[in-house]
Image (cartoon, rainbow, N blue to C red):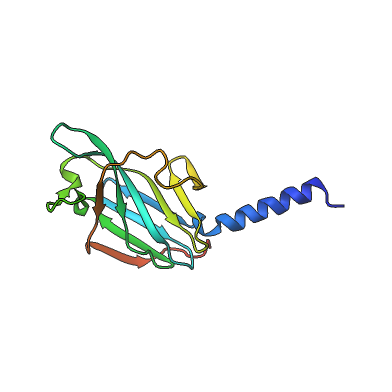
Length: 163
């Protein structure tokens, strides 16, 4: 008969294995240099990563919205770096791009991404969790999106594979 402690250990090991890749993905904003960093210390690429920018002024009345910033695939063991001042956004259908830095100091609220097994993860100041609700659940539709274009650099991650 398997003891309760053994069952707990098996569950914890399974949870740790499920979270393994997601735990190796992080992001931060360096306010002094104006750079944003997305770090993938995993031996697998990160696809469909979005950073959510909060407090973006989206119209002349000063309405604020959370705008998704879609990033390129972040290769294994790579740190992607871009300058906040290079981020631009626009409303779907508009031709004119607006610079995020003109309207706010910049707040990265969260990141979502898919791991190698197709699970969607969310990371913010409170931690990391698997997203089981539809992406649109509870999010105000803004019809805006942001991009960094080709203005970014990639460098080897300081450590890879959790080591």
